[in-house]
Image 1 (spheres, rainbow, N blue to C red):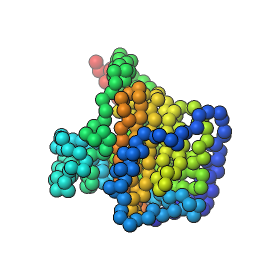
Image 2: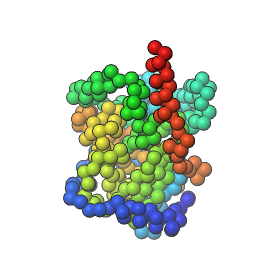
Image 3: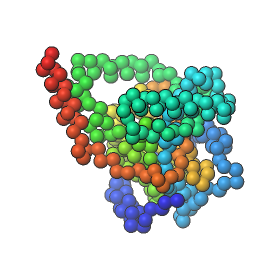
Image 4: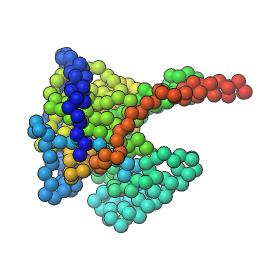
Length: 333
């Protein structure tokens, strides 16, 4: 297992220290967090028999390493039609194997059709039938009426604007501001599925490939600043062998499956085998869904799948070329 050099730990510690100015605010509550019972029940089915999770020298569960979830790059978030009426535990190994072959063949057809070769899903084996484990039907709860209206307002506000009238009309991804936020970064994509976890006594740092920043998560339950950012504000603590990370204060430009600005995300990281960490995510937003919902995904430790620098801006002419192309198209009309 790869360990962080002491010099790097010192750098991370100094950077984190610079971010810890104490301000008045509301701390992260450690009681009654949504998804706890669901996560514990699921982990009981995934924990390797006889396995004792390792500890750091200072006594915290050791989650450090280079990981990937590329195996699930073809796994859908919700239960697919092929498994209608089934729960996750009802799917037999033979059924999953057959479905995984179908997904892989579909991914490779799409890869060939779009001439996209640098992808993870061309090799993904799909060890899970789907990712949502709560509700038991494997479906994201329907949006409440207020959220539906909010989504309609967003769509209406975009009317009258072309997709490239201005750089402001382009996506955060096109503009290299944010590729995938929280909790979207937990869902595998066609590529960019590597992740690194680093730990010190006071912080956990998570680096995700294709993400333009690192998540520095304090473990001291310090007050929240109330500042809304792309990644929100995270606070972490350990519950037995599980790292629990609670994130709030997302800005209004982060929308996950129709979420609103009051979304709260509870992530749980648990080492279930010598080279496997289960990443369980509970999403709560009463302004969007009538109940919290949870999905989970395995992270496989693999030092050949390192999270390399994603230098999005360097040599990136996407924004000027998109805008130039749109002006040229308009001139022909």
